[in-house]
Image 1 (cartoon, rainbow, N blue to C red):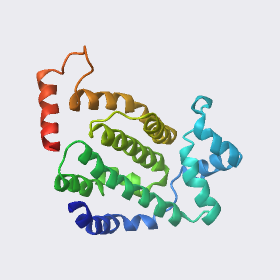
Image 2 (image 1 turned 135 degrees about the horizontal axis):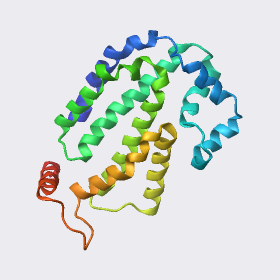
Image 3 (image 1 turned 90 degrees about the horizontal axis):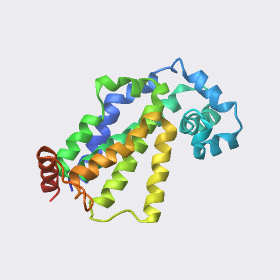
Length: 219
């Protein structure tokens, strides 16, 4: 109920604080990035998404830049417009992130409200060269929310769900290298919010208290 009620003011606030980014010019690195993804063949851009060992540079960024370049050329407005949509989806994922960690609807909505804009992250809005960070954050939290949503229901991921999770996570890795932290984050999530495997000791008293507080909030 709170989620539906907050959707319109949430979206309105997001665009109120960020609409002027549509007036921003290209970032200094944008021409280099567009050329870097334009120069290989389209097929190479596509198969590079699945070949991490070949060392392609953040190939997911090419799937952002090249379609917009083909449709609109070197007009910076569409690049910023699509970036804003990505950031809006990312803010919603922060709401889902808070929910799967046990927050109620209202606290989670406040998290999303704060995530709509932060002055310390202004480069995400005004500098399209930071699209790698925006894409990585979007897929990173999408993968975590997908995983934690299944685990919080008391189930383990099936083979199909594992494949879907890995597919989303691959998109995060293809966006920026910092996505390699996901395994550590999932281990911390399992350790704090779920029972440890048989034969493994329980968390320390502080960790156990955190886990119990989160689970109580979820109930």
